[in-house]
Image (cartoon, rainbow, N blue to C red; front, side, top):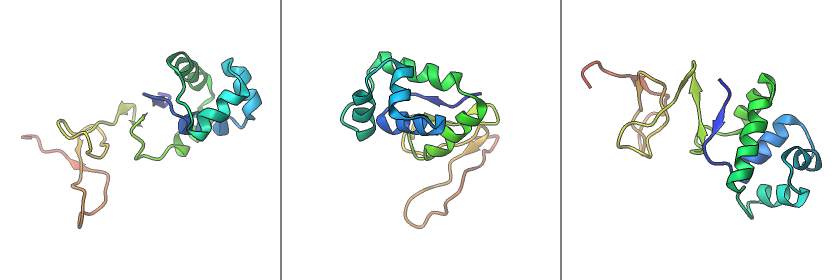
Length: 128
C-alpha cells in the first residue's frame, strides 16, 4: 500500500520531488504548474490548492515502490498530515486523544510527557 498524504503542504511536496530526484522545473512540468509555484510551496508561502493536491496524490501513486519508500523516509513520524501504514493497516490515534502518538492496530499508545518512556506502543488488553 503506497503512503498517503491527507493534506499536502510544501514540506510533503518537496519530499516527493526529492524522492523522485527531479528538479523543480521537471516537477512543475509533471504537475502542470509553474516553477515559481513549486518554489512558493516549498518555501511555505502558499499551500497547494485542492486541484494541485489531487495532482500530487496522482504523482505519488504513480511512483515506483522505491520512490514511495524514499518519500516515506523523508516525512517524520510526528507529521500529522501523513497516514502511516503498518503491515498493510493504517496507524491510528487512540479514540478521543487527538494528540496521542500513532499506533499500530492492536496497540495502544505509550503515555507521553515528562518522565514517560518513549516507545511505539503496547499490546492492547482484551478488556479495554
